[in-house]
Amino acid sequence: MQKPPVNSLNLDLLVALRDTLVKLEKEKCKGMILTSESPSVFSAGLDIMEMYRPDHNRARKFWTTLQDTWIKLYSSPYPTVAAINGHSPAGGCLLALSCEYRVMVGPKFTIGLNETQLGIVAPFWFQDCMRNAIGERQAELALTLGKMFSVDEALKVGLIDEIAKDKADAISKAEDFLDEQSGLPALARSTVKVAFREATLNRLLKNREADTKMFLDFISMPKVQQALEMYMQTLKKK
Ligand SMILES: CCCCC/C=C\C/C=C\CC/C=C/CC(=O)SCCNC(=O)CCNC(=O)[C@H](O)C(C)(C)COP(=O)(O)OP(=O)(O)OC[C@H]1O[C@@H](n2cnc3c(N)ncnc32)[C@H](O)[C@@H]1OP(=O)(O)O
Image 1: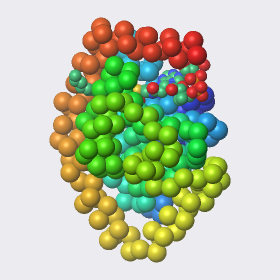
Image 2 (image 1 turned 180 degrees about the vertical axis):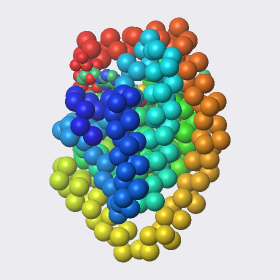
Image 3 (image 1 turned 90 degrees about the vertical axis):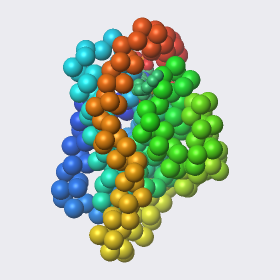
């Protein structure tokens, strides 16, 4: 990802990500490493400006493109690794959680689904991804608190799989994971992957329109708009 300054996921970046994932699958990609060009941010999550005083049609397109991107990434037949070389809050954490393996550069960055802290709610499929990675108990704690994990905490709870000392080390560890996968029969590998992920995927696939409506209704609430405005101001003042 290369959208300065913080790889916030706006409609344009989501379209680019989705189209890349479609292309990789078509071209029978053997494996993908998702990382960031920024030295300190993997992705700042959803672009707040897409949710603040939105145009209804654009907001709908934004959300359905996010759903498409997640479905493609989460169900990709080829192996996927997130080389998390910077902070990874909210939607950034979702991208990392949707890969099969996570290597994060330590020690100073943070990762987590922090939505509760912002007065918004992580959608059920964000929550499912966290639950699948760290288990029911830890996911409930993390999501109710909107906890941002340090790299050490993330490893301990199973949110990431390995710590790297810098980006090059993270890429090298990610390549080791892909090398290991490349020795396996591809169809057997992807069938097992999709079987593990099917229930989570189907939950969104069967409820896409309801999920979209919930998002649109949620961001139309004056209280949510107020919370987003205050949050944007805090970020800008900083
Ligand atoms: C009741 C029923 C409910 C049902 C629920 C149904 C639906 C749910 C509805 C909605 C859910 C929506 C889900 C949202 C998930 C998200 O992803 S929300 C986004 C959360 N992201 C964050 O909280 C991260 C915020 N950013 C940061 O913490 C920091 O920027 C950083 C990533 C740690 C980097 O810090 P750094 O110091 O390097 O940079 P700056 O903070 O100075 O930022 C630079 C620049 O970028 C702007 N910016 C940062 N983050 C965002 C963002 N997410 N979107 C837009 N813009 C962002 C920041 O304002 C600075 O701008 P500048 O001052 O103009 O340079």
